[in-house]
Image 1 (cartoon, rainbow over the protein chains, first blue to last red):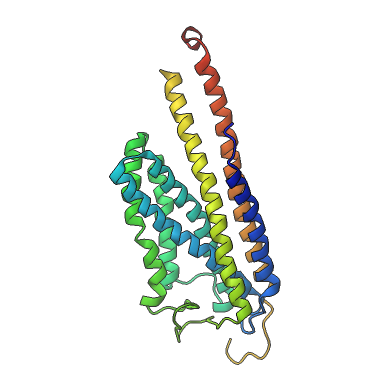
Image 2: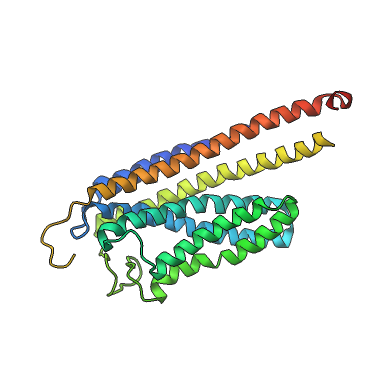
Length: 232
Length: 58
């Protein structure tokens, strides 16, 4: 068995610690929002997961370009890892948003521009894995995956800017207020601490999971190579 | 939420949000661990097969 690097073990432990601190800050340190009540506390995890997931999708698009230029399968592994972890985080973003929306908007889901673009982004990357599953040749799979992830990467900035470009009920908490948004609020100093720490914590957790997923990809490739060698 | 005078009790939704967060992250970590364990088992088995002489492989 390939031994785990010390830095990764430290990162594993650090991830658990920052997740614990972030949970504490969200649940106990940040004050209760007066209009929405306790449910507003899921906002910290909602933003933390959304931030890292969208960054991950963009990172995957960058690795796609790198793969297409270099043809080195290492970049394909990096891309798959980024997309898989981002997909999990973005799923959490959508579910947490839906849980928040029920008391704030009186509905679990509405076809608002932000929610629609987020759902489309999630579906694009689920389809990415379905596409990869259907191709056996590793080079061809990597090439198709790279082109798909590059085009799919456009959905991340579209999702991010949807609330700034279109008329929407989704609140813009950072960088601009939307008068028509339902559930918008101004953050107090304590809320900002919980908010920025959540972004930091989920970035650390993302890096940790991403590194672990890259190692898994390397192991998968080794097993595939061994299978070919043994079958010859 | 217009004209409301008291903060609504939305604790249930908050608990659901945090439970889902930990559940999803926990399941993903478990999936990484299980996939890694299965691949290591496969790798060990294939390496063993690779070491065997060609006559035994067939």
